[in-house]
Image (cartoon, rainbow, N blue to C red):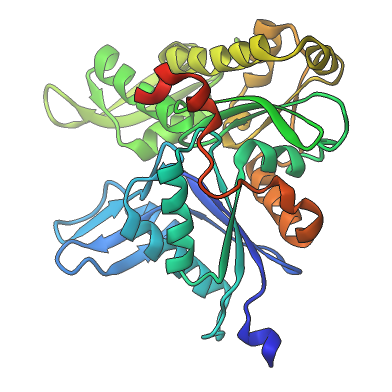
Length: 354
């Protein structure tokens, strides 16, 4: 009985775009978009996850859909806590006393205040202990990199809100950079481009579909095209436009350049011995952004380094956190100590305003 009163340990990849929950001994039991639909009047939750995402851009006055995380950190504390609680109870069905130990992934550029907010959300959602691990470290473990060896491993995790670039050796992050440019910025760039070039207003879901179907980071052998429906800014009526993958590539060039730049400046900060290892072993690409067509080619072209896409890029971070839950005592030292200042922004004070 005691085993069912104390909930099973869980790992949570609390992402801007998606949240994955792994339960010890059972695997990934939940993979849902980080979206909440609330009643505007009472603030009660109407839907969470896939159901709420389907409502984006389609809600009447009494319902609002929000994404409680922005740029990898909590933007709306109460909604995040409610979302987490909903996810935990849907995983721990019938366990009213479930109080799991929880490992939560956070961006490496997170501040001490943002870190406390994540922990607090975990406790409020019903955890008995909350531990925090940095996303690039979790991504490296999930991608199966030998992080404890004295060799340089470079991981680039392109998520929804942040791109994490880190060089890991001997179980620690040697140099890292967290930029708040990732999948969401690419979507926003497509919306802005369509507005400017075609006078067409797109919804964020349509922009995401365009990115996934015809978006690319590097010229393709056979360029594709797609029909996009939106609202004409002049007439206010629905209109269809045909765009090519070359056009979409032009639209997302600026945020893409920021991501490539982050990789280059991290390589610039890397000690020469480790840079030599990375030249041999290559850069590992994880996160939903790794699925963008040609991103590996683009990074290979810009850095001259071999680039590999992780086996299952979308769940690399969650699987890394899961490994920390399964081998808790062995990997405990990889967790972020309480109240430690952020590495990326501490080292680059000029980025504090970013």
